[in-house]
Image 1 (cartoon, one colour):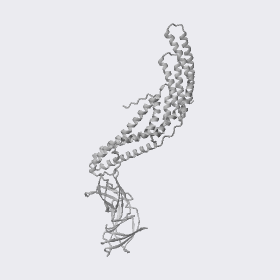
Image 2 (tube, chains in turn yellow, cyan):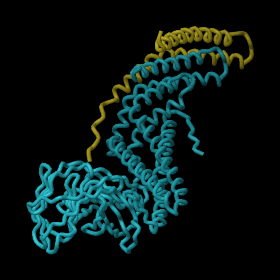
Image 3 (cartoon, rainbow over the protein chains, first blue to last red):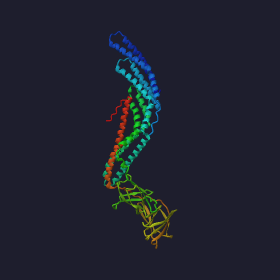
Image 4 (cartoon, chains in turn purple, orange):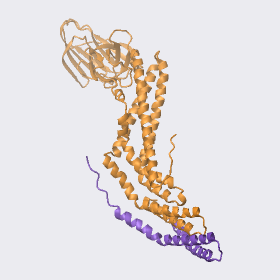
Length: 87
Length: 452
């Protein structure tokens, strides 16, 4: 296995773990937020966990699109340079 | 691994950085400081992807800037070669100066010259560094940029600083090195040009009939008189010799009387001197007629009416207003003379042998009977041989009066050389490194160049 395949495999694994963590965080966040604890600070922690989890899911879902967009934009702005002016 | 492979690997690392950032964001740990790392890594992944995508633009940018500035790498390389040649010439000149002064009462001067030699060696070393850096940048620019992007893409900003520096250096140094000649020319002191005007005179020794005289022993005397020669120099097999050009210590203006030693005799020349006004000189020996391995020595005022030399026969018709008393035939000991005729009569030569500077020479005085003034036809049949180099130690010209002046010139030149060959390139390379670090900060690197 080459280093490229290793990095790609690692990326897939990290992404799977990230999706799993998103679910866990989302669930924990809602659990804290919905728990019958009358402390505002705890509720706010639950809220922030839910927000972070949703943001993480958003960036994860958008990941491949972002990289594709970068490649598209750079390939479209890269035109062969004109020859330098001759004195 | 090609550049494309490196860039693919960098793209994989950029995606991994992005995914790790997302993973950190998704962690159920409610610490803002920790979560901020997730955002940072996502941004790093995106910026690395942008850099990977604009790799071709980075490379083309360097070429475009070079073209716009009207400089090129081949001209830079030829400039470097010219500077190396100058340094090597100075090194050689100083080495000769040291060896020339060793045998004189001014030998103590060799100590500062050795210091100057150290500086020249230092300048050569600095030139070597520039050679190394410039060839690294010109040959491996694409690889450096690709490696920089790869390092830039490693997660957790491990190689971000050095990666950004490499990318910046691949642009700045690629454009900057060919601009070095213009930078140095701007600050180069003018007295460096003086050194290129070192006196060098090339001379040629010919006989009465303008045949080249091989291995002439050149004696140079002061024009003011003096029995001791200022220098003794051996010409080459074609009769050419060189004085100056770093081999001799000569005054700015001079006039040396000349004398030529050849086959055991010492001859005056036409012209009788060489001066600093000429760069080439032809010294004619009017008393000598040379054939391979054989020489006819005649009085200076005797003219030659006819001359034939072919297949081992030398035939000369001489015209003189007085008696031909001083006519001498000289030959190398290994040159066989089969017959000598004077005015169509066979002349019996009595050869006298003597050794001159390791060369065995036989001479025969031609004293024809009842000739008086008029015409004399001398014909010699012989087997030609090559002339050998006399075993004499050369004594290069060291004009003591000009040593102090020369020393001052060398010291000021030395300072100029240290300034131009060590200080200015050093400043310029530092300038390039600083520019690269500044551009690296634009790419997001945080490399700090501490010069002091």
